[in-house]
Length: 247
Image (cartoon, rainbow, N blue to C red; front, side, top):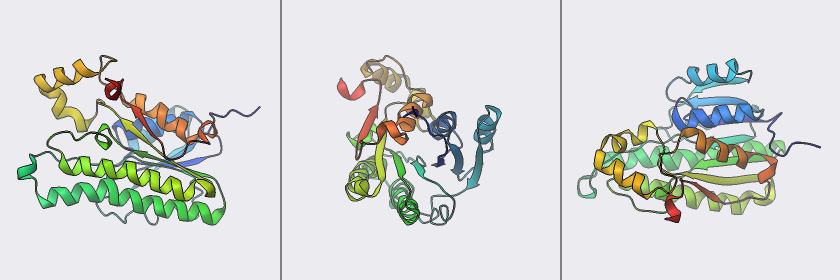
């Protein structure tokens, strides 16, 4: 019997794979048997080394998704059938003070680049007649408003909506499109929150699991959504938040 959780013979591209959640997802995909291409605006050498030293297969490519169209040439004739859109940035300021520059920068990376990279991926998958899987990294702020992150919140609401739209269009064409919504995870993006004693205490007090999440907590969910075991899941946004939204 074949293993429905195996990714043997699959080829995956993970954006923002140099650190944090992206790095964890890349290593998780490799552990499940996939060959992984690690994409980022900074070198992903550390991630590639982690995978290869563990016996997996990985390579890297430098891509800066500040240019929303930067992913257009990543997929042609590459045999990539899994895409994880993890690359993202955040800017913090009160809504009254938030700049157009910060709004556009976040929306370009978090939403516009995600859509057009996924479009390029799907065109190649459909042209080759293979099955594909897309996992977008959403956020708790796909459901909540947050504070002092207006463009990040807007972009992550958009990620959830685009995930549903693409699933509606591509489910019958052999491409699964889903999202994972991380809760409060120990990454560079949350460093400022963890360094603020009051905010850190308030966040921990609400999380039923009683701890910040680790990047590996997100990796398991993302890998699952890429496997045959998740073949009938389309347009879902899976919360991996220690119970935050259930509180």
